[in-house]
Structure formats: C-alpha cells, structure tokens
Length: 416
Ligand code: RNT
Ligand code: ZN
Image (cartoon, rainbow, N blue to C red; front, side):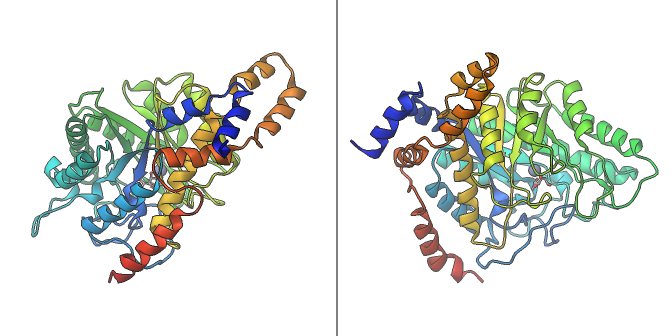
C-alpha cells in the first residue's frame, strides 16, 4: 500500500474522505497577487512605494517589465497546486511605447495584455485600484481629501477601475473582485475624525455608482488600523469599512489579517461576518509584530482562518486572496511558499473531523473535544498533501525549490 492509501484509511476511520477533499480543493480559486513579484512597484510610475506600506529587502532579480513579471508568474503557477486566480493592481497597467494614461484615465485597453495572459491560462482576474505611490496623494489623503481636485481625481480612478473590472469579468467569464484600500490617514492627532470618513463614504458611493453588473464585479472595502506615516488615524478603520459594506448592497467587507491589533484574530471575525454578509473577502498575510506582510506560512492562525472558511461551508462565499511582499528572499520562492501554505491550510481544514468536533462542543463534552482536537493534529496530513501535489502535477516537499534555484541561475541572476 502506498503512504497515501494508508493515510486515506486512517482518515476514513474518522469519517473523512481525503479523495473528495482533494477533488474539491483543486477547483477552489485563490488569488495570487502580482505585486509579490516586484515589491509593489507597478509599471505606471517611477515613484517609490508610498502610502502607508513598505517593502523591505533588496534580493536581486526583481521583475521590472510586464514580460518579466508574467514569466515569473508562470514559474510560480508551475510550482503551485490548486486553482489560481490572478490579482492585479491598477499600477500594473501596460502601455504601448510612448503611451501613458494617468490613474484617472485608465482604460480596459491598458490591461489587454493581462487579459490575454489570463485567458491563455484559463485564469480569472481580481483587481485593485491603486490609491498610493502617486503625486496626487496629497498630505496622505486620496478619497477622503478635503481638496476637491484630489478627491475627484481618485474617484475617477475608482470609476475607471470599475469599468476595467467589468471588462475583466466579461473577458474571462469569471467575476472580478475589486478591492478598495486607501491608506488615508494622519500621522498625528487629528482635529476632525469624522470629516475624512464622510468624504471617504461619499467617494466610495460615487465609485460604486459607476454602472456595473453586480454578478460580475464585486467591490470590496478593506480596513486598516494604521500605516507607516499614518499612525494616529486611518479613515478606513474597521468600523467604518464594515458599516459601509453592511449598508451598501453588493459591497463586500475585506479583512486583511495584518490590519488589526495583535490580539485580534481574523479567524474569529470570519464566522462573525458570515452571520450577516452573503459574501466577504480576505487578504491572507502574516504580520510579524505589525502589518509587516511576511510570507504566509502553515502556522496556527493561518490554519485557524482556513478552518473557519471550510467548516462553515463558506468556500463559495469567501473570496480568498494572498497579500504579502517580501523582497529579502527569492521572490519566486516567497510567492510559491505563501500560496502553498494557504493550500495546505485549506486541505488541512478539509481533512479534520469537523462534524464530530462540533457535535462534541454542542454536547458540552469539552474534555473529549480538547483531546480529539489535539489528536487530529497528528493525523498523517503530510501524505495527503503529497498526494494532492501529485494529483495537481506539482512537486511535493521542498523539491520545488530546486526549480526555483535553477530559475534563479538561468533567469533572475541575468537581470540587470
Ligand atoms: C495595505 C493593504 C493592501 C495592499 C495591496 C498592495 O496594507 O493590505 O491590500 O497590501 O493593495
Ligand atoms: Zn491587504
């Protein structure tokens, strides 16, 4: 008997069908963020990354052109099991030679090459307007700016992105999740905390008023507790964004697990929101002490988040996207490791005796629940994971890293 067959039997004893879990996971889309490939640089400006976020590290071989970035994404795809969806930011617009369009003027045609890329590979596309790294970010503000010229510019950007999202969905035949994160806020104590939020609200309402098919374009709003340079106040706080989504039909709340206080856990927030929202979205990241966007690992909170999606039967209600950027290690490895970690977390969650454990909880058998939860941790998950990788035609274990090293030698190290 193979190791997988042996493992399958042991899982079956707990009423877990590992074959079914593998078949299911293969078809669950997870968004792969294009911005791990170039440290959130993009192609539309030479400006350094700004607006409350920062990439650290200087590992050689970063993609600097659309061709390089696409090539790197292909490498990552070849190393990851599961179903990938592409996640783009507006700053990754691709212009013809000599052509340029500012963020408020972006058009679907500036993303034609991405659509071709996605269609050739059968991928859906998610999208993000880019409210940072741009001279029109004035005093750290965009959609909540008191300067009407600034605010309008960014509203027009948002509307342009709705049109581009609609284009992505129509072209690929897969709905496009369009996430709005604006890092608007103040470094020091504000004199008016409500004004910026009212302007943010108005701006967001103007953006979503742009005609779109709600079945194809899913606007989200992402909260954040603070950012670099905006430590004292952020307009898009948790309460603000959650209430916005709750009161605006078709708008989804997006939770990034790096955007809360260190003792708050998104794993606990997922079921809370599922009680109210038909759909919601996640940015999966790993904050070390703060929103540091380290590479996602197969760690406890990552597992716990996946469990909440899986055991609440919400895989079709939760849009899952990765969001981290580490420039201190090989970027292809960082990308791959994070994607694979979330795949592991999902598969692990599908291979737990969720029904039995829930029954123990409801029956008040807490001692037994405690014992069984611990026991389940040592089921032969590694064998199921390896089999899943095999079924998906990718390498298991750390063998994929050999390919990353070869790619570094042949491709990345030759980049200027
Ligand atoms: C920033 C937010 C946001 C960005 C991406 C690039 O703190 O998490 O989602 O990381 O839009
Ligand atoms: Zn995020």
